[in-house]
Image (cartoon, rainbow, N blue to C red; front, side, top):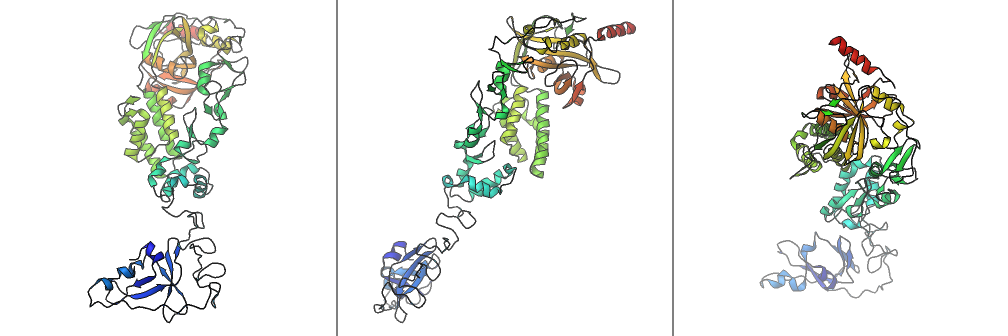
Length: 565
């Protein structure tokens, strides 16, 4: 077989007539410079007796086996009875000069005036359109813009153009991410390098993982989206503008910093900094008192907790409550509605039913709950969870498994100053002062948390009973109610914390619900605490109580007790 160097340096070329070499070789002589064709072998100029001037022969990968040079001719190297090569004397020197052309317009090298040979290719192997015999240009791309399969380095890929071509500008292009990764693996010489490809959590554009930036919300975005984001005034982390809240001093803060360092002012209709000590409003005094200031509540099988009595309560960290697991289960089931295909829809529904295999611990030796869920989804249901799904599951699990260790107290002395209930600018001591009257005269009470003598949080609690129609209504009964509703939590008793505490004391479960009880001002719904059979119908539901500012509920319930005595 002839080598690359021999094709460009040898003056004599032998060609065998068969694989068995039973016939003598034909000998050709060089008649000019060889020309290499991209991915298609060499053009070799030869001269033989009887030919009309120089001829060109194409040596390819398919026929190179039959070519060799004189020193390697098998007939020369074998026994003397082998037939020797058949020599073809070199033609006499042509009278044509390098500038002469034959009748078809080709010079002695076989190229026309435009530099193309008889097959339409130039000396580099490209046709007039710039494409080689395989249909690819000098950069390795065909006429449709697709690169030569398996020929590119991952770092040389133009991810933006390839992504636009692959998705065709379609909306919801995040659906094409897995297919795009497979497409790129077919283009590059090292497919494993495509494992480093990720997608911007905001615009879905592809990018190498080293080029993404982590936002304050925990998602990874491309440099372009990063530049469009806004920094939180407190923590300096980047967020989408819509994820920040503008405060009264015209700064923008994230939800976490807002909850930790800012307080809502109803008078100014905005959030003020907790460090703004000059921000103050007149505090109103209550116009009435609770008709039953002395009361007790159940306390996890211990002695009932009496009003205005401090009690240390602890909820362990790391155990996800049943309500938390139920919320995760419902969330995963809802993902089936927006899944891309039937297989994913079925997988999400099966996953929501098989969560019990993961237990209720946030952290085990097999990883945290989110990692265990992701691994379980892939191994058992062939479902790869997206970053958004895992982030949302993690937030739910943490909300329902955070440790609680706090001193609490229940009270109906709601005529204390607002700062004694943590939220010193509460509208319940101002523009919505009727809210406190409604809470006091409808059986409600305050739940407060303390650190030493300092109030660190508060939430409002209303005991509930079922009426003759099975509806939940307000009651003054705190030891044997059918349910509690908790709302307007602040400080250490914001979010799910007060619901978990009351549920722990009562031995019940809890649900986040929509809640209204006019004329009380209610912030963002509330939490229903009840036995499972009572709580279940309110999952993702709403509770509205009929209350009045100065209710006679206590008198009516007292009269009912006397009648039934």
